[in-house]
Length: 198
Image (cartoon, rainbow, N blue to C red; front, top):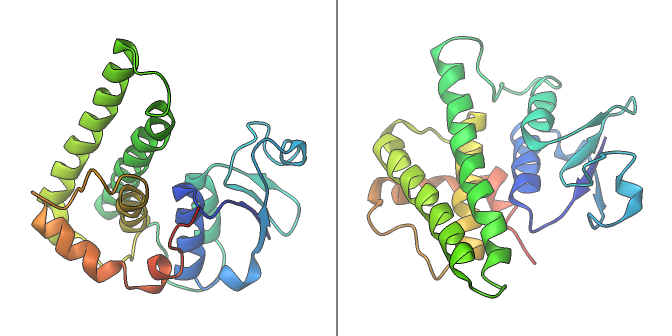
């Protein structure tokens, strides 16, 4: 198996964290490739990371698909619960964590550009999405487990990305329950071994 990899991508971190949680990380070759490299296009026409190639040569993208594939192989406990309320909760939490990353990653580029009113409005809109998501997670923090679902792993990666790219906008004030949960799970192997760099 082969993973198109960037050590700074929160989505790549999510895939790698899932691989660690499922005991598959040692079976995956990391392919560090810039998204501008034409070699990535045959694997993913969107030319994005993460992109993944299975042992039988099938290409998979993006992180939700790759993570579900990893959950389908191996013998470790599943990160995607069986159909029912627990599954919908995990998938919703995955969407919320992905949404935090979706609102945060492009905003980092926007702040480096000339700040006209349209750009300022866009940045404020993305900030408000993250703020609302954090408030929902604070309300649900007591029900979060120890990285046992795809939702919890995605939330952990999203909070880590905020720490990594936006330390000047601390998310912990006003979210003490979420802070306490994150302090516990960030020390677990899926997050501790995948700290972003770059």
